[in-house]
Structure formats: structure tokens, C-alpha cells
Length: 453
Image (tube, rainbow, N blue to C red; front, side):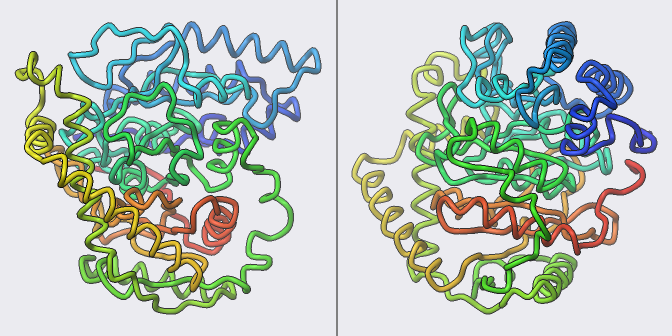
């Protein structure tokens, strides 16, 4: 199967931060940027299948309006004129939001999700909706991995990850209930950020499991992720500018990084382990203290409680549709709903109690170390499109609501990317992004020159 040729070296190949700097210097305009990415989409989208629907006319109209605003001296900030993608579970005013399912086909929200509204206010341009697996669960979407079209991009934020990796937008919104942001970020060789639960509002997002769902994002670099995060929270809880002064590694020597004593490395393949220990050497080179950290005794029990919570809450959301439209549900989602419907109220209540206790113990763990580091996935992306891959390494941090960042850490022998997962205590996004930026600066280049098969 043929694949797209070289990554573009022109406008569409820039990072979000670089595109923003050129827009604000007057070298290029939001209209230039938007035309460039739409041209890129025309060229390669038929091979990648990242977009559920595009809004080129509206995007170009917004770009012209934002270009004129800059000419008049009205600047909305770093995201002014930056085209992005939005996962098809976020409500978008006037744009169909179907969550990849025939059940919601034709549903057009009247209002934007809070995160989308914030991004529009910050000057971002919505190109369209990126493909999600059906209702953001595990039944694969048709999207292909831009690094190799014969491999999965991961999921459920499949389209968002692929669109960013293939230079079809400068960033994209995702959601994560288990591993839906960090896994596709690792598989596609980009950055994924799942912030602390509810740092980004979930208002206007179609839920999967409401107490586990996180709003987040995918980007080309950690700096890009910081800028998008600031836009999504409307600059209230987070200030990206604090990350851009001086060296990213400055002051990191005061921090301790913990390698978990179990659960992660024992499940990773050999290539992933080699890349991971290389990443640890890089962190040591940055002056961080690296040590083993004992996970709480309740860790595995808490993860299992999260899994039960996942099943029950998904079943509760889907129950009415499932009973009347069972034939429209894909196999894995149907199995999830059926399993959740069989769980007793008592078992659900006990699971919630267990999860709260395990989360409290994880907070204590972060009194001993500043960060926990693991591989983002047990291996590189699996071949074929019958699976979205293994989210075992991501789901614990969704269960406990902790912020987690996936950054590229090299590649497997077949050239597919591998990801490093960095985790911090609740609401420590700034420290987490500083660490990610510092690691990114010393890690080997991870974007291949070509999208090879």
C-alpha cells in the first residue's frame, strides 16, 4: 500500500508554537495557515481517514476574520489563527456530533462544549471533527497510522492523533477514559496530555464513563500541548507562558522520578524496555534523581475497581438506547454494556469506595516522588486495524484522576514510535510539562522523514 510522501517543510509542517510566532510577526496570516492545512488534508486524508467531517468554508471564513482582527491590532493570544481538530464527542455548535455512531447521526448541537468555546475565544480555528471509535470505546475506526498505514493509530482518539501526526492540523482535542489519548499519541509519535480529572471542563462532551472521563489533547510538541491546555481552560487555572523562560531543565535537579516496582515493566516487550532505560539515562543526565518507588498495596485493586466502574457507568449511559437499538451497537461496546448491566448496585458502591481509597494512597505515593515514569504502552502499535492496542499502562492514571503526559522516546526496530509516560500528582501540570519539555530537548529526533509503509 502506498503512503503519503515527505512531511511538508512549509507552513503545515510547523509546530503550533512556530506557526503562532510567524503569525504574530506578520510573516504569515491565519488565512495562509488555514489554506495550507486544508491543502494538506486534500492531499493525504483519503489514505489516513482521520476526519469524520470537515468545515472548510467556515474555517476559511474564520481565518479571514482573524486575519483582519490582527491587522486592526486585536490579538487573542498564542492560538490566534491556529487550525485544530475536535474529536467527534465534543459538542460543536452547528456541526454534527455523532460520536462515530449511527445512533447520533444527524445530531447538531446548538452550543459548543465548554472547552471548544474556550478555544474559539482564544482564536483557534475549528477545521472539523476528527474520527472517534464508536462512542469512544474499543471497536476500531477506519483511521490508519500515518507512520505506517498498515498499523493502528490507537484509539479511541484515533482521528485526532493521526491528523496531528500527519500535519493536517496543529493540535486536536481528545478524551480519555482508559487510554484514549496517551496510547494513540505513543503509537503515532506525538505528544498526548491527559490533565487532572476536571481541570478541563467536560461540559458538552458525550460521556463514556462519567467519573473516569477526562478531556485532553494531542499535539506535536510539549510546548504546543501547553499552549492548547491554556486555551482549553481559558487561562484561568494554568499559565503556559511560565514554561517558556530559560532552559526547560533549569531547576529539575530538585525533583525525584520514581520507577514503579511492579505492573509496568514486567508487561513491556524488550524493545520498549531498552528505550525506557535509555529515557531514564536521559533524565539522569538532566540532573533528576531516579529511584524505584513502591506502588500502594491497593494499586491493582484500585485499577480493577476502575474497570468495574467503567462498565457500570457506560451501561447506565447507554441502557435506554441499547434496549431499543441493540443491533446498531458494535461488538466490543455491546459486550461492555451487557457486562455493566449485570453488576449489582452494591458491587458498584464498593468499587467506588475502593477507588477512592486507592486514589488517596496514590496521593501519599507522590509525597515520596515528584513524578512516576513508565512506558506509555507495552509495545509499539500492533499491525492491522482489528484492534486499537493495549491501554493497560494508561488506565491506572485515568482511574486515579492523575495528570499524565506521553512523549516520544525513540522507535521500535520496525520504525514505529514508542512513548514515555510521565505522571505527576493532581494539578501539577506545569511541573509535568516542564519535565516533558526538558526530556524532549535531549531525546533523539522522533519524527521520521517519511510516512513509510
